Length: 323
Image (cartoon, rainbow, N blue to C red):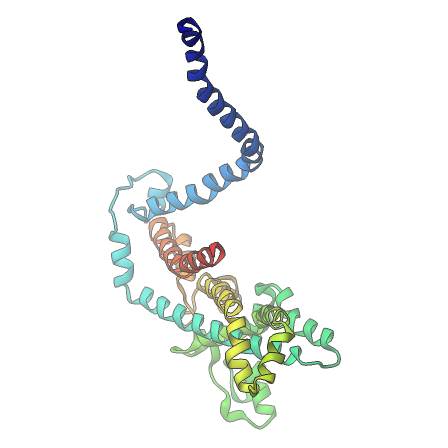
């Protein structure tokens, strides 16, 4: 009996190990092929996204401000956050941040307002809905550069006999008193650039809201009417809460697009227009004079601003999905 026990004990001791190896091999078989499939994408993202972000951050912490330093003729030194301190103390960069804030508010409020109104109108049973939907969505198919060239002419600041674009139109319909400098206005010129931005992206927001409207079951509306709710109460307590996730998604998408706007502003104005200057334009201007460190610092500031907008939304979305 004792001999038999001595023989079986090692087998019992090895049994959990065998089970653990079996589980490990089964786990590798399950997630191994998937990992191999996505590994090229993981490597590319790690190198060309996060690797370059790290390189940009490192450049922003150096004093690489001239062509000789870029070419290696002169040494480049580590200066920490000195570039960021100098940027935020610069009146021109402060002006760019204020312009960015005004442009973002104009872009965001305009697209949400017109997008919601158009979606609300199309949600009603009207004839030719497909035509109106196509008309509203068409500007989105045009590139920012192409539309910017047209809007540059329309927002021409010439007035009186030399008026053109919108100023000429206002003059023709007897509203000449509303003519203004548009993009040449020293204080609110950047808001004029927001007009083509709103025109171009309102159709996209309309599509989001229209999908939200169509996703609300008719049973909810009918139940509200049966309970005696009027039209305003129906929208306030049933439709608006259902559209809140759509509005949040639209705000995040439009908000981050406005923060990194570059091509539309360059097409409507150009990099020399102080009135319409935003941080993305500053970054371009720094690059053209080989001031890589300040350009990288501006890029890092934009990255942080976008992250402050997007990351909370991603966290909120992850929490909602896990419920």
